[in-house]
Image 1 (tube, rainbow, N blue to C red):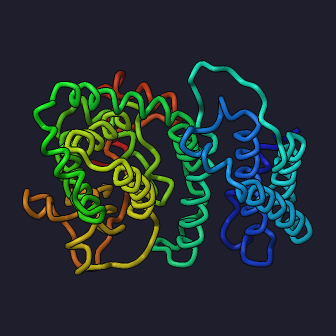
Image 2 (cartoon, rainbow, N blue to C red):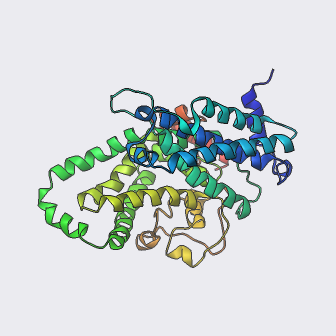
Length: 390
């Protein structure tokens, strides 16, 4: 007897030809996304001490939040029923309906908080839901209407691994934040002499601080990123990110635990050290989440001129390219200026990479990839090169 999850996977990965509009596939897909979002929000409301981030708990206490949750759940029910009526195969619709019913059984939008622990440890279920709605519901439709690679499916190869990365980075937001901010706290405690500079920067107009924050962090990230390509041991961590063989908004989530912590550390370090306003930092973090999805997305558009001033999908796709000309180029996150200044800019007019990935054999699955930098061997590197025909 087939596993129900296998039926769901097969339905999600169905060929483009049999999931056109009117087939019930899209209504089922959006029903599933909204059901997961609604269930996650209900869980966060029921056990806020375990599953809600402190920042979002403030939002969850507003008068409009519960009506929004209720609307999300009602929409998921309606779309699930529509999918069940239209589609011969019912796996997506039934799964969405089951998750929505589970959310209702927990109490739905009117759920009351339950007493939880006071350990000070939480998992960001609500943070994951916000990310899923903000990024998934934004980029998934855009990639369908304006794709660079029309043959690439929404649920392409290795999508489950990347979704798990996305889930884990959201759920462990507290751990990542604590470990990333620890170096900044130590440095700030020992740099009292910078108090005047911090006051001057913090007193600038908000918009000017935001632009400065983008430029400063981008410069730091350029060299951080370049080091992870040039230092063999560091490359073992970054290779996990580059191992994605298809580019879309979800591919940007594939990052090793260690690299996430180090990247967030070097991003927060200049902002905290030089006294940028907390609201500037929060806005910048929100921008990075959206921008990362954008530059990895499967979106068409050459932007030959604009790509010389701002990082675009084609610019960053060349960074992930498998061709020889794509090796060690385009390290900037926001501004190609740094690549131009330091000789790593590459944006051939009107051309895209023909393939993505790395010339070494990366194991499948999150836990094997987590261990990969520590067990990486020349044998794996040679096997990957032989497989790729290098």
